[in-house]
Length: 558
Image (cartoon, rainbow, N blue to C red):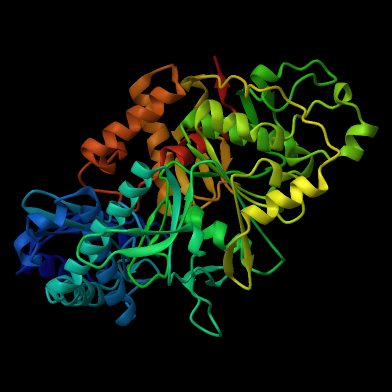
């Protein structure tokens, strides 16, 4: 540490570039500080540094990464402790960590190694204009930083971390139960589903919050480790419909289910809302590009004789975009589709009898989802959970109908089936018994040109944009992407795949390669600074990765 102090004293009041003299490794009492990259000027991205500690300094034993779930929970816990300490001491704009949200994600902010733990930070080096403020830098690096690390990760109660491990074990146990018993989602009794606001993912704690209570007919009891069995609503594989009046909680339930592909932190209210890991939320997405997708199960016989078995467009309509989103999700391997009538294209979801009478089938290229949903499950074992507010014809194809009434679910399957029988329908089924083909596409990786001028440009920009060369990949319609660090990781993974696989590869091979390498070597494998930085990558699912590849406007399919 004294060496760093001497350098900061020497460069005090010099030009900002003199901060480059701090590059290197410095030994503190409890950790080593590695300064890997110094920001170019006071207005550039902050300095990248790593705090490397022995595992025993943090009290971490083999239980810390006994399972994948425990390892990720440990990473989330440490990053969260540091983030909280920085906020408490008003240091969050001076020293930063890519801290967690409500969902528990595998991150590069903290890396567990055999004997050590890497904590990756971004640090603003202080200046007045472009003049170094050496005294302030010395206080930040040799006083504030050690105090933060000491308070956050060397003084916590071991029981706190053990509770995180127990929760991870319980969540994994519930996921195993769902898979073995043919369920697609589970919502525990007592869960708090509403969120604080439209821009906050924290649980709602004000007002008369209604906790979740399963209907008796849909309730299951699941044995979990470290605690008594947990009870809640479990929906079977098949076609599940959620109905109810406006503002009664339909979309809130679906949103909780779609986020259930991720584990949640203790106290979130959704920690025991768990969904099939492959579930994909799909919607209409007007204006997106589509490249070589076989949407013929839903759309064929276009008036311009365009081939829908390899459909491409720069400006998809609501119906064609939703068809493409479904087929792309199936190609990526989903076994459960999640949809909300509010964000779907009406003409894609259903055509009623009156419209069928006026516009005959030979004049209508679209086969509505209602006529394909049962074949999709029967042939491909893909379930659907669908929020419906106005299309009662879906009662005919549903296996289960849940009605939300004042935020409380009721099993109304029998009533819905009776209504369907009593009222009948004047619409005709517009599809045969087969769903249709799901085409396995090959991607021309050469169409991912990262060059922008003389340099390569590949990076995430916020949650919904990837800058890839001259193209901006728009991810605003990918609703299960929830953290900008996932977007950063997707950008890095695409560039890594291009370098690893050459000119072309099957989409499935791209996804499998990246999944395998990240599982075996961690997210660092896709970073150009392996073992050092960046510390702002978080694990994305293969489905969001595929969604980004599919939305590249220069994408070419062989």
